[in-house]
Length: 175
Image (cartoon, rainbow, N blue to C red):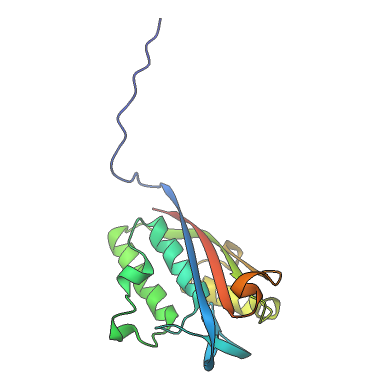
């Protein structure tokens, strides 16, 4: 009779391992600001309220990347209590987060992302090509690695009542 022994689990990441991260963010509309989603200006729509430029799509993506790397979230790295980040461009925050991730995990690379923007307004479809291009550029991946969807909340809740926008993002990354 063969006896199976359990092997102890490694406490370090194996080279070539895959990691998943999930991010979420939401912001209310601010009629005094310009809307930016995925680093792209969206005309004729109120902007979002927040300490930075409030690009909820990039914030969800940044949190998903940080989660895949096992690192603190965007609020810990770039706290809203820190005046250095007031009005900050979220593309810059994303780039800084990627730099920190790559310092910790030298082989870190994005395999693909799946980003969902939930908004009654604006319609996301007309802006998807520009948003996908910008995300691919920021992440240094092929556009085929970027999935972007626009959804409504069917009139339900604060997003459905057009009070703001929310975003969810999943990331698959290789270490």
